Length: 116
Image 1 (cartoon, rainbow, N blue to C red):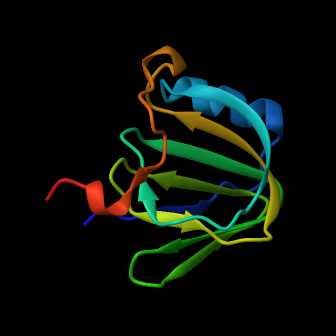
Image 2 (cartoon, rainbow, N blue to C red):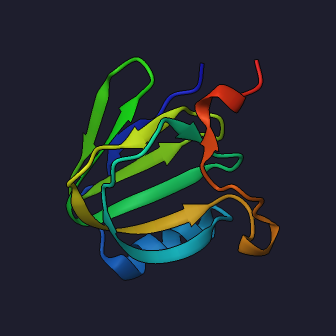
């Protein structure tokens, strides 16, 4: 089972978060996000997100809810089943482990399509 990790970054500026994402070999940049009602899903790429402002939350398949506020970095390994918690509003620097040109559709793969 894959799992999301949330760690304190000790506070980080948007510029430093972009540099950290790039140093990891990830691709991305700043985004303003609002949690939407959605089904459980997974991605076929890894995600790293530095929360710059606001509060975000995701629910895991086992009903665990993980929250992240300013100054945290969230790592979501590919294959982690999750969904956003509706109503959260936050700004992140979001990085993905593959170049955007190599992304496949759908980005949010339904949970029941996760290989066993």
